[in-house]
Image 1 (cartoon, one colour):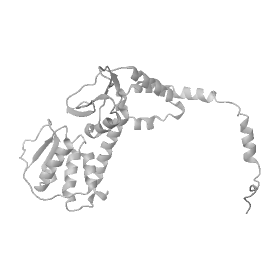
Image 2 (image 1 turned 45 degrees about the vertical axis):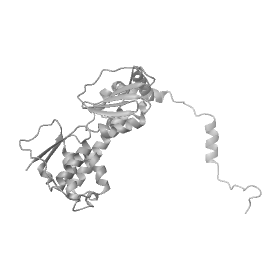
Image 3 (image 1 turned 135 degrees about the vertical axis):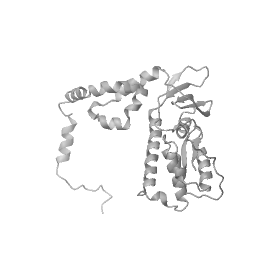
Image 4 (image 1 turned 180 degrees about the vertical axis):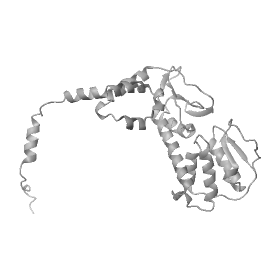
Length: 285
């Protein structure tokens, strides 16, 4: 039997948890479940979900790991999470065995989705919008690799709770208005937004750029090119890289040629022979 599970785009983790419990209690093998998101095509054979009974038990670490696996875009994360759920019923210490192929793959995927959340926190750039109220309004666009909008949304609500804002991705709209956080599943396209803050980002980035410390590969590892088109300061990167060698040379040529007067006194003190220090009166031993 094949069970084709298609989960809602909002509330995905809770929906996966409920279905996974139902399937696990019925003893459905991991290979008999096709996981995906609502709207994705289903197989030719799709049986109704079975009823099951019985208790399930998992260690606390599994909940956190599963929460990192479910956003994985291809559906592999959901399948691995369910396979681990089944295996944990007979081996509660399974997650500590990094030599296990399935466990190792789970931790690898979890690391990838957590990194995607970190990139969203780092690379979202808000642009200010006109506001008819006392609260300022901002909007941003971001293109995540995985479906990480829900776990990332609370970070922005906590960090920017004093203003109204909107973050759009190709699949999700995150709206924070009057202190209320709402997510909706809808297709979005990148808006054309420009404001004074974007110019401020460019000015700030150009001033803090240090050509003498430029490491292109390291920079691209932390700021992959896929994010560049949504970062206002990124349009400056090619020119800054191209001119880095010349600017570094100019910096070296403008260094002071003579040491300041105090340098001689410091050197004399450093090279002076060591002498015993006489303890102050009243502290002799």
